[in-house]
Each structure stands twice: as C-alpha cells, then as structure tokens.
Amino acid sequence: MKRTLLLVRHAKSSWDEVALPDRERPLAERGKRDAPMMGERLARDGVKPDLILSSPARRALSTARLIAAALDYQAGDILVDDRLYACDTKTLLGVIAELGGDLKRVMIVGHNPEFTELAHRFSREITRMPTCAVAQFTFDGAPWSAIAGVKPVSTSLDYPKKK
Image 1 (cartoon, helix red, strand yellow):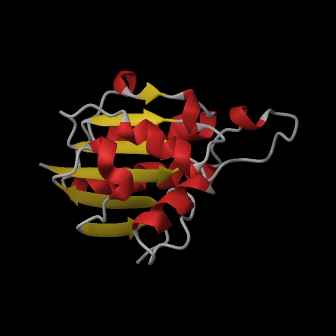
Image 2 (spheres, one colour):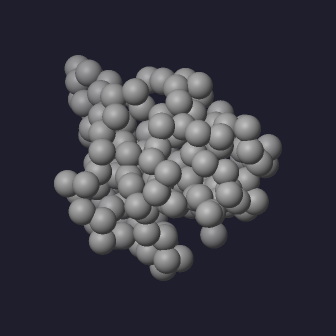
Image 3 (cartoon, helix red, strand yellow):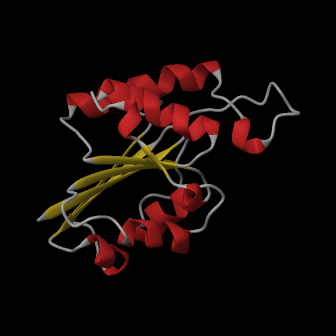
C-alpha cells in the first residue's frame, strides 16, 4: 500500500502583538490568504487526507483549519498533538511511526526548523520550507513505523509564491 505524508509549515504568522506568548500568535493577513490558496491547490490535485494532525500553536491550527476547509475535511476531525510544538525531527518521526496502519494519506501541520529538517532528510533537494509550504512524500509499501528508514518513491514541494 502506498502511503503519502504531507508536511505543511504553518502560514505566515503575525508579530503585531509582541506580548502574546509564542503559542498564541495568530496568522497574519498574508497567512489567512495563503492557507486557503494552498488548500485549493491540494484539492485541485485530488489530495484528500485520511488524517490531519496539527501542532497546538494557534497559527498552525488556523492553517490546518483553513486548508481542511478547502479539502472538505471537517475541522472537528483535526487532531491536535502537543508533541508537534517546539519539537525535533526525532519526535516528528516518532509521531509518524505511531500512525495507524489503515491511514494512507496523512497531513501534519507544524513548524520550522524541524519540518525543513525532516523534508531534507527525505529529499536532499528540499533545503527550505517557506511559510505555508507543502512537502509531499509518497512511500511504496512501508508501514508508518518504518518510514524513517525508507526513501520516498516521489517527492514534491509547493509553496504560495511558487509559479
């Protein structure tokens, strides 16, 4: 069974309220435009995740909800995982390894630098994930628990300013 992992870096966040804790930073106006646009691109490509996981940070969860709306994925079905906030690549791989065997396509919404690091691990061609970037990796036959040691059969990277 083919499995597809989508890593989505949260959309552009606002720094207008400097007193807000980092986890509470909202999306900037650009982020509010980019996330639905990226969701529409994914929908056009026929992407429909079986599961969307998100960091609990406000900017990540807002990004997940806006993309989910474009994909006809119920916002209430988005799972929030505290481990996805301020984590490292090893933690990300641990979250992925725990995914259920029946899931074919999973989207994870979170942060840099760990998303760029993991994307680069899967594809040396990905060296940077701009805000609201979507890195898509397809694996042939490997269970989620083994993804860390498997090379994807296909890779793509899309982001708002890509032509």
